[in-house]
Structure formats: structure tokens, C-alpha cells
Amino acid sequence: MIILESKRLLFRQHKLLDLESYCAMEMDAEVRRFVGGYPRSRGDAEHKFRHSLSEPPLDRLCVWATILKPAGPYVGRCGLYPHLGPGGKVVPAEAVLSFYIARAFWNQGLASEAAEAFVGFGWKDLHLSRIVATVEEGNSASVRILQKLGFNLIQTEPGLRTLLKFALINPNSNQHY
Image 1 (cartoon, rainbow, N blue to C red):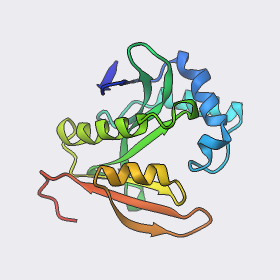
Image 2: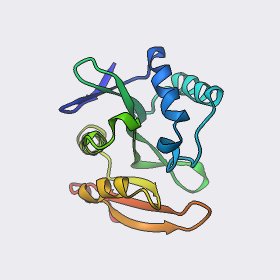
Image 3: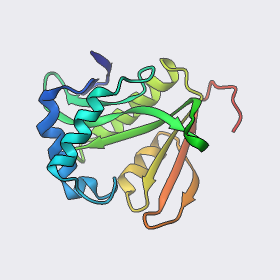
Image 4: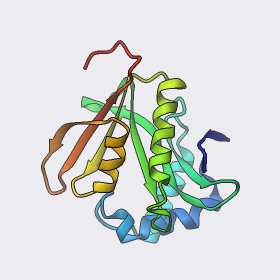
């Protein structure tokens, strides 16, 4: 099932045929540098992949397989997933933006295209009032993508890995933050 399309990308459920590309991305130290900080082992990557196949999306909130059109390669995984607030409860009308692209496809604007598509999807199809994103400090490419889309830095969370938290409010929302 295709959930969404952009000019060059389509977003669908993961399939077993995505396993090799998914694992290669998870095992790539450069890709994982700002997402967890270390590459996963093959076994851990396969476990994560198989676990993701068994989790049904909550109202289309999921990180989807990202495929280059027309029937091209798996280039990553992108989407919106439930925003969990204090105590682990889902925050209504909010989601977290995720864009995760394999290194072979960097510097082609695919992450920007995916992020823009999912922001539009969040507003038009899911009727979200706010989308948030977290980026590890130093990941300037992801910060630039968020800033181009109008996200604002709302919090810096210092620690072993300093995290920058961003938010974008739906311009048509009557929610106040």
C-alpha cells in the first residue's frame, strides 16, 4: 500500500524485499552517526526490521519505506510517528517527523522532499496541529531541512548526545502552544 507520493519518491509499507537495504543503512556508521551514535549489528538490524513489520501503523503514523520512483531502489525510511508526551502517552493531534536516508542518496534533496511531503500530509490528511522533530547537535543538514520548512527550535537537551528539539505549528490550527 502506497501511503504518500512526492515528485521523486513514494512511501509504502516495508516489505521483506527491503531487508538488505534496510540492514545496510543500519550498519553504516556514517548514517547512524546522528541516529543512535553507532552502527547496529546485522542481527540487531534484522530484529528491528522484523519488529517494524509486525507493528500496525496508528492512523497512518508510521515510518515508511522510502522508494525512488518509478520503481527504483529503497532509499530510506521517512514519515510521521506518534508523539509521546510525559508518561509515554500519545499527544493528540501531534506527531514526530522522521527522515532517514541511505548515504548513497545524500545531497540529492530527497530528505527535504520527504520532509516537506510529510508535513503537508500531516496538515491535510491527518489534521495535526503540531509536528515536532529531534535532531542531534552537529547534524547541520537535518537542522537546515527543518529550518527551511519553518520549524523553530524550542528546546536544547544537553547530555552525552545533545538533542535539539524543533516544532512546527499548523498555520490553520486553533491550538495554542
